[in-house]
Length: 296
Image (cartoon, rainbow, N blue to C red):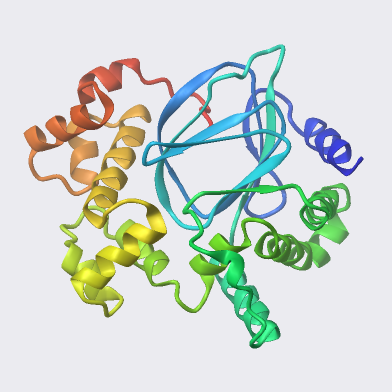
C-alpha cells in the first residue's frame, strides 16, 4: 500500500513529462513517456527509485535494469550510460531521485559502525560500485514519510533533516548498505579521490596525483580503485572526461569548448578517443544529441 501512496503523491506533483525539483532539498520527481537509449551520463551519489516503468544504468559494460521492485544506489560519482529504453505513453516511467548528502551519510555510517562495535557482519564481501536493493519496509516507509512532508510546509521546515536522515539510515541498513558504508565509511579513500578528480576535471590529473591525494602507493591505489569502481584509474578518468564532454556537447557547447572544459589539450586526441568510446565523432554526436529535459 505504501508504494501506491508514494506513486500517487508523485503523480499529483508532476504537471508534465520531465524532471522537476521539489521543495525537499535534493529530491526530484520525473516522468518519461518516450523510449530513450542509454547515453553518457555522470551520476552523483544518489538513490533512484522507480514507481512505474523501468530504467537502465550501465557501468563498465555491466547492465543494471530496475523497476518498482528494486531501487538503485550510486554511492559515489561514476561515469555511466543511462536511459529508459522501454518507456512509452502506455507504460510511462515514474520515479524519484534523492541526492545523498555526503556529510549526513558519513555521520550515519560512523554511528552505525560504532553501535555495531565488534559485531560487524562478514557477509558484505566486495560490494559493487552501483548496487540494486529491494524495497524493504525501512526504505519504503522512510521514503513515504519523507515525501509526505510536501503536503505540509510547517512539517517540511521542521522535520526535513530528520526524515532524510531516516531514509539514509534505511539505505545504509538495506541490501545496498555494504556499498554505501564502504563509500562513506572511514575507509572512503576512493570516493574522496573521485571527488578530487571531479573538481579538477580540466586539469592534467595523473594516477600518481590521485594516489598521493590519499597517501597510497600507485600499486595499492590501482588495486583498491578497481575493486571499488570495476575500472582501472586510467579507464575511469577517461570515462569521466568523455562522459562529461558528451553531456556538455548535448547541452549546446562546441566540441572544442567541451574538450577544453574536461582537460583535453589536443582536439585530435579528444575526437579519436570520443569515437573509440561512443562509435561516432563528437560532431556526429552533437548533431544527433537531443537534450530537452532528458533524464539521465
